[in-house]
Length: 377
Image (cartoon, rainbow, N blue to C red; front, top):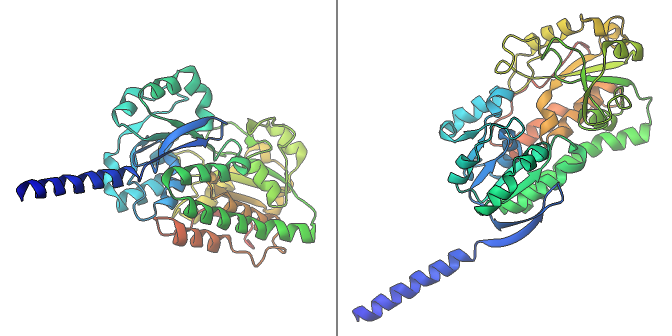
């Protein structure tokens, strides 16, 4: 009888092992760099090559956004300290998560990454050149760690949906990813369909990237990222034909000569990078009155001398991190309201962002992402 019981127990244990094994499946995913990568899914241990990838990862694992994360880059606390503080307050254990430097800066510790035994490492496409030059892909492949590229920044209007699908597939959360993608698409359509029907005159828009971050002026966007979002919102991006790539600089004389109708400055709380800087601290729960004062101070710079947008009060600030996550549709809605206030008087970007938080995100919504010198907006 004892022998029979032992055999039965062993058989049961064997069945459990077989059952557990069936939960894992090796698949091939094509990342945004066009690389075909084999990964065992659903992944249980993940390294985020950029901490701000939590903006979407958190949407897939809303109840436990850090349950798969075994390590992440250290950028979130400096680039978006309010969001980091909110996550830390709700999930204090993230303070113990191993952190990394950046690939591009050459401060990434590959030995530390290997020691964490991740199932996959998610890396932004902008780190591809540095990754290849350092031979990281080959080194990680030798120890069985697949590296997958995603992109929410270099060509976000092209690569955001594919990136969300990739991460959804890796996490075994395809349905949730598609739900997010549909919400994003529906939110953009509310702007583009209205513009297509009304066909309004498009204002000339200068987008200053991280205004006040340094004393120099003026960083901006070419035909992607915020530059492309302006086009979606019914404007003409002033720097479109000046900057050949996604990011670049225009000189102050070009701003004055172009005389834009609208100016939109991206901002955030960059105390961790530039203490006491002139940047406009919009973001999660930001002090909007203080942000408005700092925005007004930036209009006094030589680059904006006599510019129509300043004269008319059509100068606005928007959260910089919209440039690096799949929430761009909220920025598109807000910019559409600024550029065409009569056409979009019933559109409510704040309500859209609040719904995004309620349906998908681990944190409650807090306003503070936009300010304007136009008091009517």
